[in-house]
Length: 76
Image (cartoon, rainbow, N blue to C red; front, side, top):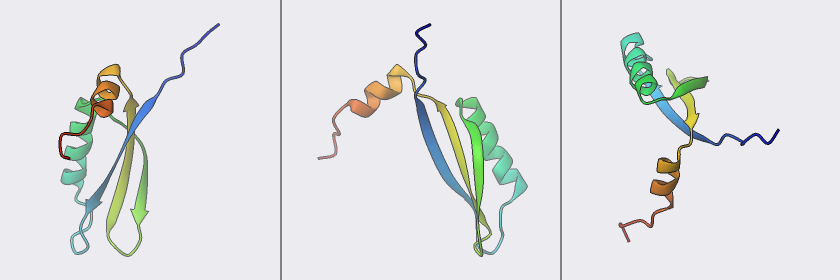
């Protein structure tokens, strides 16, 4: 059986602030927005002594995204 290998696109975002930490409603809003865009959270990483976390997500890499990424930049 010749199965195609799935390619992934990854995303990392830091959430929280030194003084206020990570607010549940801010995190929930981020996760809901990412879910609507097809992102799946695969991990979180606490940034020690900063009251922040990194949220790491992935989604399947589509032909549209590959094409957009391979186009030359217009900001030369």
